Structure formats: C-alpha cells, structure tokens
Image (cartoon, rainbow, N blue to C red; front, side):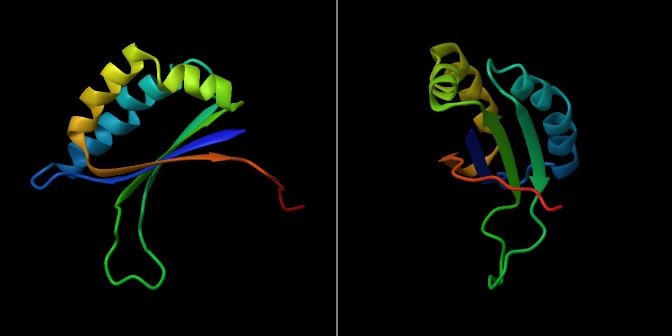
Length: 107
C-alpha cells in the first residue's frame, strides 16, 4: 500500500473554521474521487513531542493500493492543475510518499 501524507499550515490571516468546513466537505469529496484512492483521512495536529511549537497544524493522508496507481492519479496533469488551486489555501506543505512494509492490528 502507498500512503501520501501531507503536513501543512494555514497562511497568515486564514480562517480556521472556514478551512475546516471546506476541508471536511468539498475537499474531502475531491480527495475520495481521486482514481484509486482507498481511504483519505484528515487530522488537526494537537501536540508534537519534544517540540515547543508545532511545525505543522494539519495532516492529510490518502491511501492507494500500489505505486503505479498512485503515480497515475497524482501526477495526472488535470489532477496537478486542481491540486495547484487547493494549495492556495494552505502554507508550508510537505508531501511524503511512503510504501507500507508491514501492517498489524492489535488483538
């Protein structure tokens, strides 16, 4: 499985509540409509261990079955165009693409 993790903040002066409304409705639907997406999660980061200030306030995760599916969807020119518009709402984005090695659930 491939996981796209995006850590980010809001630009100065952005309205947190308005952003949350957009992110949990319209943008969540857009994320789930990406071809191949299995699951998409959104988080507000509350704490960072051994950090006095939070380097990032928000995190989005999107899961894909494999790298081929991820690359085909994420690097599609139309998706990149839509992503550029969405990125105007956030600041300091860090995109991490990871591949699952092991996954285990507690019993």
